[in-house]
Image 1: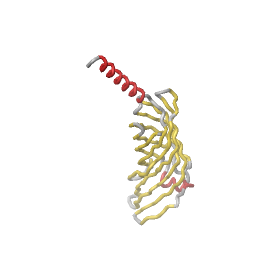
Image 2: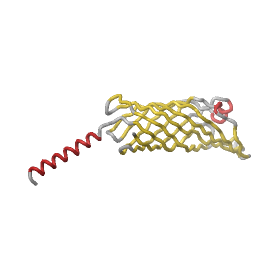
Image 3: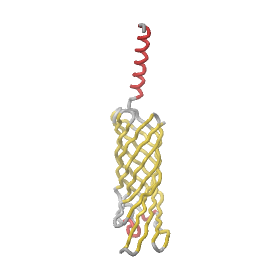
Image 4: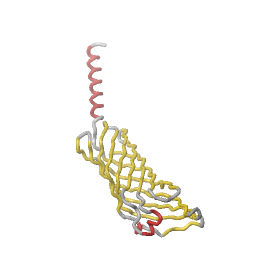
Length: 209
């Protein structure tokens, strides 16, 4: 290999390393994410609880606080929540109640970047209840309980934490939302739910713009 080839090889390697370094810089992102919800509630005095499976979708953006490291990540989106709770009254009356709640949510998260490929985030969320209904099944039959939106807190809030992994513009992630406010407000709803709060695990895929 002559000197010219060596110089060209060095220039090629230097160019490749420069491109990689630029691509590895931590960048703010804007995009859309969505996927599966597995929702549950902390309901006392039930024999079994099963999650409500639904979906979530949101738009997000990142605003730099400490360049290349720490970002503020606000979002706005939609989320299904609820649970199915089985009960047994005095070992004689058995059944289950299914609670279905749909929210508009606004998470506000602090995002810490590990390179340009992994984001760790934690913060809080606020939600507004769009729709609510409850179904009941018992050993004496099925019925539709008239527990509409007015029986539940319109405002929900809580804590969020998770991570996102990026492959170019493609993102996969997971998140857990822990509610801090009881869902039920009316006496009728509290009979079934007590001071139950929302709990949601999420698996997401997304794209950045």
